[in-house]
Image (cartoon, rainbow, N blue to C red; front, top):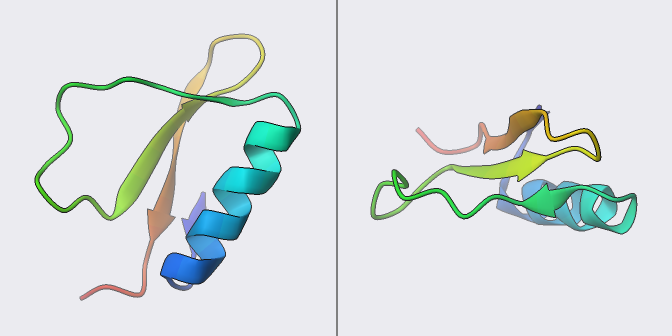
Length: 54
């Protein structure tokens, strides 16, 4: 999923977690990631990406 900026990304992650998604403890995050890894209720992994960086 894509977000316009960091604020939209944070809001979207919070919304998805409230709906049942969970944050994935992923050991391959870079030092300053522009994405958040989540898993849906069935375990499918996906990212919410801040496209405002560049």
